[in-house]
Amino acid sequence: MEENYFQQRIDLSGLNRAVYEIRNEIGRVIVGQHKMVDLLLIGLLCDGHILIEGVPGVAKTLTAKLIAKIIDVDFSRLQFTPDLMPSDVVGTSVFNPKEGEFRFKSGPIFSNIVLIDEINRAPAKTQAALFEVMEERQVTVDGYTHIMRMPFIVLATQNPIEQEGTYRLPEAQLDRFLFKIEVKYPTLAEEINILTTQQGKTQGQMLEDVRKILSPVDIQHYRSQIQSIIIEPKLIEFIARIVNETRNNPALYLGASPRASLAILKSAKANAAVKGRDFVTPEDIVEMAPHVLRHRIILTAEKEMEGVTADDLIDNILKAIEVPR
Image (cartoon, rainbow, N blue to C red; front, side):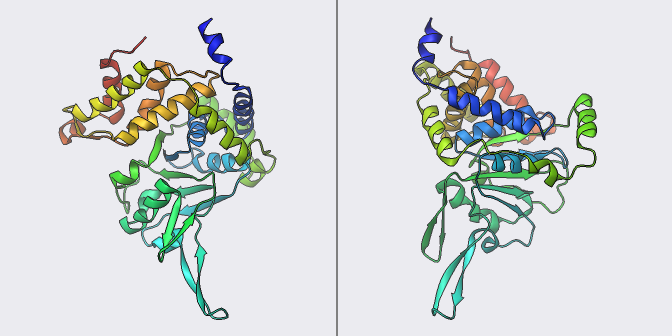
């Protein structure tokens, strides 16, 4: 009875229908990777940037292009390299001799879905150019502020294996990503499916028939609905306890910030909505916490030498805290 009462408070039928159609549309092109697709959708609904880590060839770039095409917005792609300058990303002022004044020429960051390939290959000064635009959705050049068009989402990829010529991302930048998604290899059955369905097809051909499902207006409406998702005070305390434990854990050199708490709250609400509920359960929080926390915490050197991973530690923290019922 209680669940039926809650479901009548917010009509999520439009959102659930859109999510179903998006999954089907992406599934026509991408084999498997269901978790990555769901997390990208949740990130879009939370207005959050996403860091995607995986070896080359696991459809990271293709999925980002699909998301942009399905929601009918502009898409741009940047390949980060060690010689990339901040002006190559945000743009620069160019002198117009006819008018006798400088005009701002916007860079590729001025789009809706921005894919940054191998984000950890650019040096600190180029990384710093992303700080303002990722947090405040604006760029300041020569004293003038330029506002980004909504929606604005950065999807960044990095390769966990090849570290030569890369730079460790600053903690302040990592904290600006809502999620870090770790993309795994496909299963044997999925690999056979890929070979069967995609032989002889180019990426352009696979993207050609993808239809538009969402508009920017739809996204804004669904985001407003997600903000109204119900979360009980005891679950808010549960989120706070999880994040607080990362700051007091002896195995951690750096714990998570309050931004992480807000990220878990927002993503748990979106996860509930995607699953057709207008109320958050403890399972929503437990499901979202690893993706929110894994890039925000730093293990002590001793734990890293022991082979402990961030996910191992997050799992231990979640098991140690009593789940409210």
